[in-house]
Length: 184
Image (cartoon, rainbow, N blue to C red; front, side, top):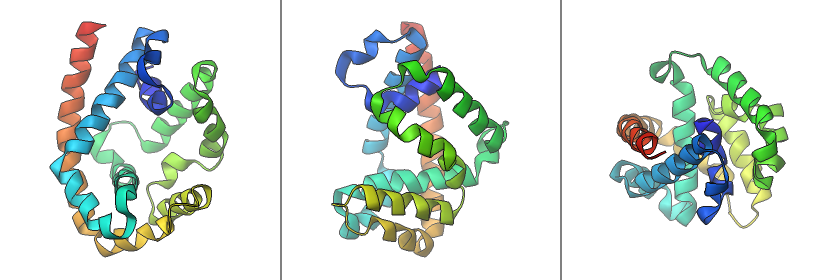
């Protein structure tokens, strides 16, 4: 349930998280802490700086997606559960907890599952589809669909930065979850 809370966190504003179960609350709070940690991280800033001239303040959104690519691509290095099994379990959980999901999540969920977004992140073609979709939906973000050009051009740099950042993030998340468990 922490994973579901983490996933739905962007759709929960302010103190509204307190209306959910303790486990969902932990996921929401963990997500918020991860966002704060990520936004302040120097490695992530290095990645976003590479994109800033072309994409402005949307560089962070793009780097988040690029980092999702490296996580999916290298999943076996980080988990003893296969990516396919993890995704299947996650989609089953989404279905199980559908009644508590925010409207924004409920709107994207059918597309996410049908197009298997999580698995698509593992390939550059999949990332391209993500950027194409974002570019279509968010018309004011000019040329976001071109971000795979930078991904391919700076692939090794982004992957190296992701690897260093993710090691820090795993340690941070483990410690933060212990702290949240002791409070809830």
